[in-house]
Image (cartoon, rainbow, N blue to C red; front, side, top):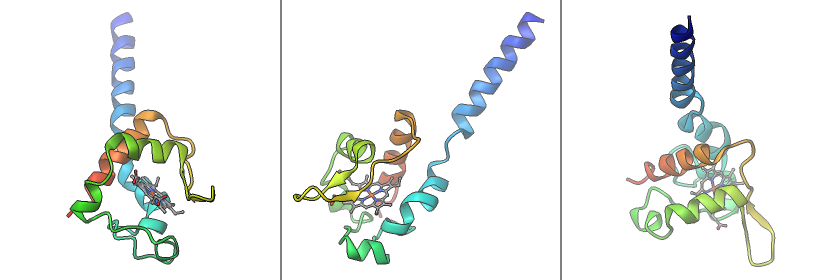
Length: 108
Ligand code: HEC
């Protein structure tokens, strides 16, 4: 009895780790409207905000994972304090780390 409960607990935590957060789906739902599905930034919002082409290796090399993490966690502002990218909502630090990892895969 005890052992099967333990197994159940182990299995359910495994499934949370594997399926609890889907970075690719989140990208499509929350990020692509600005960055574009591929990360090129050629959307209406992307053009308005002059978002860089994140498929470009040089652009990807211009910031660290830590900076990307911070940009997502806290959002980014222009020099006048106007929000450019909003801070993410309802994501754990692990989720944000997964998003940064996904973001890196946009590089061509
Ligand atoms: C409202 C439009 C918008 C949305 C939605 C958006 N972004 Fe951004 N993102 C930007 C802009 C604009 C920049 C450029 C940063 C700046 O110039 O302030 C940026 C930059 C970034 C960067 C680079 C940060 C750095 O350090 O240079 C990452 C990583 C990023 N976005 C990931 C995401 C992810 C992941 C999502 C979805 C959860 C997302 N963005 C949703 C507008 C957006």
